[in-house]
Every structure is written in structure tokens, then in C-alpha cells.
Length: 352
Image 1: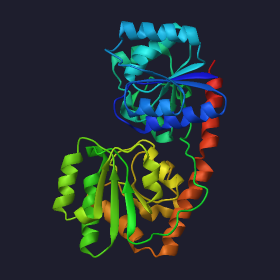
Image 2 (image 1 turned 120 degrees about the horizontal axis):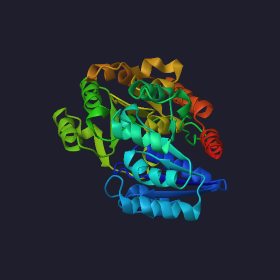
Image 3 (image 1 turned 120 degrees about the vertical axis):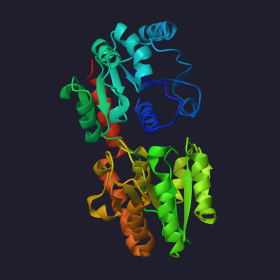
């Protein structure tokens, strides 16, 4: 099976990680994935994986030159499906695939990614894409926002992750926390920092590694200094090898105020980290039912993050090991990469 994955976004998000994981699985199982994207880390990683990669600027919406290029490429390669991410993907590669008689998949990462405006409705009516989402929360949100979408047009297949073969060792020294979300306002890092500052004042020992970049980066660094967290906090910026940082940590913190199905949370649980998160979006569809006490309520302040963070810092080693074990087992049972990737491949093969 030959599948094209088209992504014109500039920032790294969960859909890009999902794409690369699936591309790697497809290549390893005898399929022929192809990636088309802008220059940057996503393109570099696709090239590293050894898959056919086309790198270029996408130009304006409905760019005649880009539509012409995709049409020529699709008619030469005859892919079985074209998977797009955002509107510009659909308005170039999606149009070309429709003109070439190739099934189009719109992989949606958040309910608000599609707006109920005439351009979106008309494009959907022309391309007739199948919508693929990773959780029921996003499906419900799309149906709420876009009442013209039919249930049968939306397929839910959970994101899969490669799970660790063994549990992580107990902490050696202060508990090590890690956060890997983009440093943007909706990710709630300031709430996490305020909760941790309160715990530091109470005498708790910990280290926090923060990965990622975003519009809030400089403000958050200044806030960390103001809160007196400099000696406990390290900012690492964008990192291509996030898993290396996760493997060195004990607890993963996701303070987001809004989420779809958080890829970062899945990655951490799949490596056996104890999770602390806020009860938003599709987090509940990942969360181990036995650890609701580590799930903060959805309030947009630091108070909501304080109780679960205090709980993990108070936990003795055997209790913390139990949290890690539960998280890893949930991923093995519900989000195994082999199982979920196979489901996507079988679904794509059935689109023709």
C-alpha cells in the first residue's frame, strides 16, 4: 500500500508525531509511505527514517502551482490514499487527490481545527474526505461544531505508542519531573510553576525539566526566576529526542488547559512515567481509572495542580513504582503501537 502524508504546518504538534510513528511502522511492514511537508525538523526526521520525502513551501491557499504539482505526482505514483492535516493541505494536496480519484483522509487533532464557514463546507463537499480522529472527545467536538458532518464520516482510532519493556528504576536523588508541551498560553505552564513554587516553599525536593518552545517561553522563564525555581528548573528548548528526557524522569506533568488526545501524555505513560495532568479534552480517555487522584480538576489556576503534584512528591518509592506500573500497563493494553498502527493500515486499505 502506498500512502502520502501531507503536512503544511510550521510548528511541531501531536499530529506530526503520530504521522512519523505511523510512517515508520508502515515502512517496516512493507508499505510505501511518502511525506510532503515544509522544511524543518519534521522533514529532517522523515528523511532520517528513510522514507520518500518532498520538501517545499505550500504557497497561498488553492495555489495553482502546488495543486498542479500534487496532481502530477499522484497520477504518476497512484497512491492508495492521501492523508492531510490542516486546511492548506486539503486546499492543495486534497484538491489534487480528488481530481485524481484518490481517497482523501483528514486527520484532525483538535475539535476547533475545522471551522463552520462556507469555505470549509464547500471544500468538504468537493473533496469528500474521511475524517480520522484519535479519540471520542474530538469526534463529539467536531459533530458539535460542524453539524453537517455525519457520524459515518468520522472514524476514531486511538494513537499508538511503543511501550517500554520494563519499568523505570526508582529515583536516585530528588524526584525528577518533566513537561514536554509547547510553551503556549493554553498549555498552563504558569499554573504548574506556581504549584511547584508552593511545594518548594514547603520543603519538597524535586527537579523539573521543561522541553519545548513557544510564544510564552521568555515570560515563563522570567516567572520561574520570580518564583525562586531557578535551582530546580532547567529549560531545554526544542529537542528532537524527547524520549531520552522521558527515560530519565519519574513523573510527567501535563498542566494544559485544553487538549485533544495528548500525544505527550501517551509518550510518557508508554515509558512508565507516573502522570499528573489536568482533566481536560480527551485526557480521560487515556487516564488510568485507578489514579484519578493524580488528575487535577479543570480549573485554570495553580491551585488545581497543587494536590496531585503534592501526592507524587509525598509518595514513598514503592507507591510511586505502583503509579508507574499502572500507567505503563494501561498503555500496553489500550494504546499499543503495533495494534493501533495495524488498525489504521487496515482502515486505509479499505477506503478504495
